[in-house]
Image 1 (tube, rainbow, N blue to C red):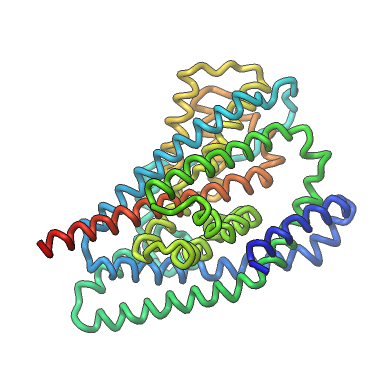
Image 2: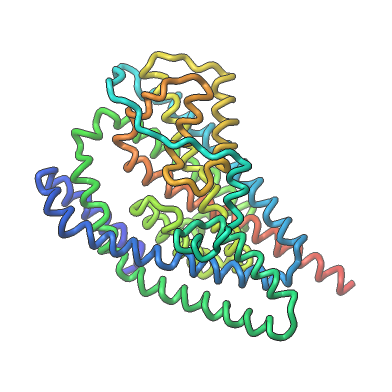
Length: 408
């Protein structure tokens, strides 16, 4: 049986078993079954830094130290990420505008959850440069690891024959990482079941029904963004048919939906993008790790939906200028909160402040944040590969044109 089908079957089984077991079984499930899911997550996480470090070095060295090409790929990638994020917020507003979540629901008296202040853009830039690369790797801080890997990769291309030895070494290390990921993914159906079962038991239908409209908006917005925006990017920009694209992404999407971790899905995402979609290592090794930290299309949909939901609950009418401000703030916040834990709530808090909505509204969505996180993480990692397909095709075309000019 195909692994994607096995994971989907495990997902359905966990929902059925969770609803039948109910909250009364939560202590037993938390003690004996949930740890199996934690083990699976740890197995995935242990490969994040090795895959990013080795693959990125291989990608940079394959460019031959061409700083112009690296800069071109970086600029195109970041531009595409920002554009798709802005579109995602608009889709979130559009879906919420039709369904109107929160109408008739009274504001609860819960206090807003504490959200750490987002770092400034300059603080993000400073934190990107590691003072201790080993410490950054130990904490799985992806952005500093990316910067360190870039320097190592460029430096390798600047030395003599010994550089080729290092290129071959890191290339072999990357291949070993992918083999380990293949081994770990055989355990995925069991890990998925163990991860979702306690979530379903805890967030049963009684908890979810009052906020079902918010969940429906997030789900519909996510599906629309994937089907229309990512299909268009992959098809017209990347030259990959939508069927092939989503078939190649199925394993990573299932894993993201279950784990709610873009970084945790990164190793599988990189492997599938190269092996199932045929994207080059030099592009995926840079675009996907960067996307795992700054590309937040799913979170953008969540922001649009939750902003309108909170406005409806508190009886606040959002003007067109308010909506434009949310789109602008949310797009910039996607980079300003790069690599920050709990980035979704931080971004939502920033957006609520920008249009003077009460932060107490965070308490309304905090209870279902784990469910919403499933949708936004799935969209995030899918968008990473859609953008990578566009960048990869443009680089292939450029290389073909350059070769044609040389022949002439």
